[in-house]
Amino acid sequence: AQRVTQPEKLLSVFKGAPVELKCNYSYSGSPELFWYVQYSRQRLQLLLRHISRESIKGFTADLNKGETSFHLKKPFAQEEDSAMYYCALLVPGNQFYFGTGTSLTVIP
Amino acid sequence: DVKVTQSLRYLVKRTGEKVFLECVQDMDHENMFWYRQDPGLGLRLIYFSYDVKMKEKGDIPEGYSVSREKKERFSLILESASTNQTSMYLCASSSQPRGLKLFFGSGTQLSVL
Image (cartoon, rainbow over all chains, first blue to last red):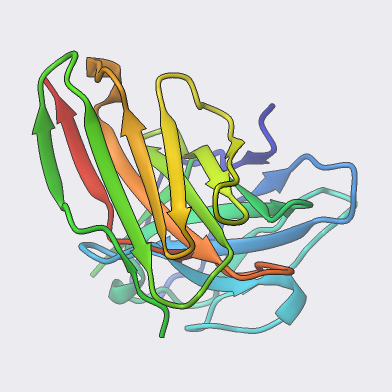
């Protein structure tokens, strides 16, 4: 069953423009959600997690339980933000379920 | 920092051959995972392990098996490779009891001809 949905496979924005990468989840319990990022020629790495309520590299993500969403946002995109972004859901048993990913391109 | 090592970056095999992918982590993590990464499909969990000699099936275990004889090492085995197993294979590890962060290897791109 699909637990994490990322509706956009590709997303292009201009440098300096706001960016939002969408993530919706399906889970009956209390969700723990994450964003992972993979820059070109680098390994997949954790960007941020909702329980920390942190801002990393200018990105934030708010868990909206009513809309079952965990969208990733940044007010001003930078060229170095170009990467593949994955939303992930952690379920009991320490299993992560990943979305299909969104490839972000920031146009100079 | 945690290091998860997949020693093979690229591997080419023929249909029917046995494939052995190895993953080693150096942070004494209990949990280890094998994913495959395909464009448009994201990361899909093949197998995972919570401890030595323990294994659990993920979403797509068919055609794969795993081995965890030592805590630091988690191997993925394709007994008889098929072309639809051409993919990027990612290994990851996390700690117990609540593995809130996955540490990934750099991946092995397997091509089955």
